[in-house]
Image (cartoon, rainbow, N blue to C red):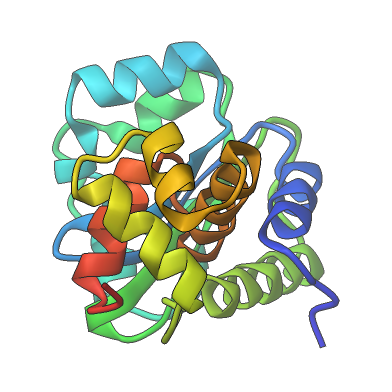
Length: 204
């Protein structure tokens, strides 16, 4: 049993297990992750993004084709034309591991780093256990409450919050609470994102 009861708890534990940071793409579908969490240092994250290394990262290549856990040092058979792993070392990510789980249509992939030593087998097993728990916790919802659906529909239809609250005969703060609950259920940062995800999962 993982003991992970919330997404935030799981991400906090991964921060403890990977002291030099991590990048975790939860439930990749259509080349986009449901949730992307990156805690690597800002300089490396910006360098990685600026050079579009996701397109040639051996960790991602491995994760798309395999399930399980692997140390970065074991990825010698995977092409690394831009020396992504070598460059990561120059930014202090000296040792790393990767985890991949889930079906091809909804894959979760993560890379995790240390500066002092290789991850032990026990640490790798725990990281993988937490990642699998997060993969399950972020399974798309099969439903929203009627109140949540109505709130999202009104905003999607162009209503301002005060307008929508008046139409439902509730306070504006109660209306905002419904939107917040819908965002949390859909793992969306904004209401616009929540509306898009609800439509994607045929919940509106």
